[in-house]
Length: 314
Image (cartoon, rainbow, N blue to C red; front, side, top):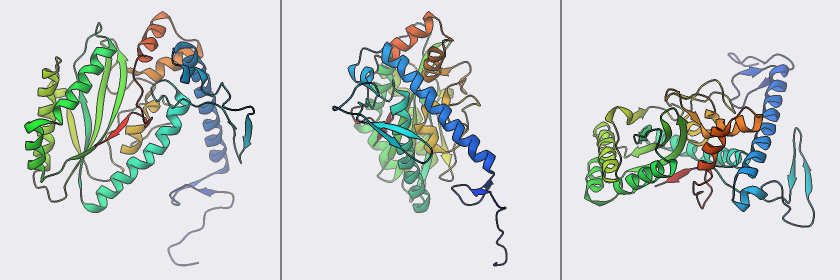
């Protein structure tokens, strides 16, 4: 054996990074957690199927696409083939989890490429102020209108010029609810040219322009609530999800942006929770009429036509 190389104990499997070893018991526990998560998502999908007026969601995993259904057996799981899938990233926890997994790989590839090329990366949140009586549809409309306004006209071109001629971004929409009402917000990953010597000032200019555009859209955005923080390495991101999650803790920017189900409990915005958490309560029977009213609002959200887990590339 070469010097400096050690062998893992018998019966111990290396993880996907081939650095840390996990015991057989840990592997079993991981498989069991995955199975439990799948069952939870299936149960939550049944609730969403009954709540929504959308035919594709109502049929997801329940209606045949052809005259027969396949049972596909893998090494550690089984699945069905020949059933309708909806791709509704805001309503279906089963489809959202599958789509988000693929998108996480794509976002990871972007951040790893940016790190290799020396691209300046910034990640954070852009929000709008809201109150308990504000309808989700109104807050979402303000958010989307402000984004369109922000990335057009001379004001945006001035930011692009200051950055060295190019500003790229990937953004994710997240929707939480709390005592102060619905809290939709954007999580942008901003990429600035490697040659840019004014990256920090460009990031600050983006948040300032965001506040201006929110006001033009009829809303308000406090300066304290807006943030774009420098990401030094591809795997870095500020940690703000909590212990109560679908898939466990995650501190990677790719998971942060794509796995909105991984934020089922109370989030860093004090007292808020994801709409997935509400759906979970409904599936477990731990809900009241307010939960149904809240989820009915979520069913009005237009689904992205490309079904890409709430992410947009620009």
